[in-house]
Structures are given as structure tokens and as C-alpha cells.
Length: 178
Image 1: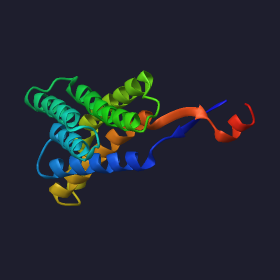
Image 2 (image 1 turned 135 degrees about the vertical axis):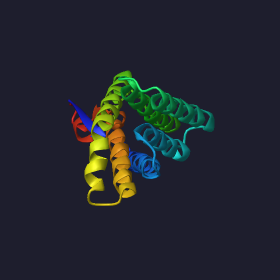
Image 3 (image 1 turned 180 degrees about the vertical axis):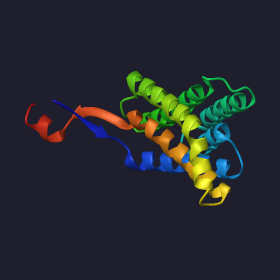
């Protein structure tokens, strides 16, 4: 029987921290949800170990999506940007797997991450403005916005969980011939 396991804890934690920090920084600086998404993408892109050309391309794609969302918001803007950010996470993970000579990401994992990213950013666009308003009654608005930007980054990191799940035989079972 095959087992599920979570692969690359340090890489996932680093990506989550970077996404949260980037989102928090731009939202606390007076930005909007699209700019917080771009901040998450920029932080992950700058610290990723993928080749520079792919990082720059991914950052530009996320920034272009955020810019378009900011200028002409549409109902599909948040889900599209969420999918784009999830695909950035997938590109970083795929490059890391290629360097380790590991099996590549499954298309289903990438599709599930893109779907999760879409849902996460859609939820963030709907819920985080209210969170900022509620927190701003207790703390300064820049801190409330920063916390909300951090929440956005964490939600986007959780959307990348499918990229870190692996299916394989457990060592104990493969030794028993199962």
C-alpha cells in the first residue's frame, strides 16, 4: 500500500514565511490586497533557488496580474492572481525536485495547488478587508494591515501544500514485500 508523506518541511516553512513577510510588508505600507499578493510573490521569488530568468519571469507575471487587478478589478481577478502565485510556488518546487533528481511534480498536484491558490486569494479578497477593519479598532491601522497581509501569505502557502505531498511506499512495507 502506498503512503502519503509531506516532503520538504524546511522549504515549505521558508516559502510560507517569505509569502507572509512579503504580503505583510506591502499591506502594512498602505497597499491593497493585489499589492500584498505581489509582495508575497516578490519575497518568494527573490529567495527562491530557481534560475534567475524563471524567477524574474514569475515575479513579472505576478506583478502584472496584481497591476491589472488593481487597475481594473473583475470578479475573476483574485482567483486568477491566486492561481498565478500558486504556479510560482510550483515552478520553485519543480526546479528544486529537478536539482535533486527526484520525480517531478504530478500535473494533478500542480492543478490542485492552482485551484487552492485561486480559492485562497478569492477568500482573502472577500475577508481580509473586514479583518483589517476589525483589527484597526484595537491596534494602529498599519499593524492591522500587516497582520492581514501576513494572513494572506500564510493562506497562499497552505494552498501550496499539494506540491509537497508525495505518494510512495513506506520503507518498512517495501522491505516486507508489500
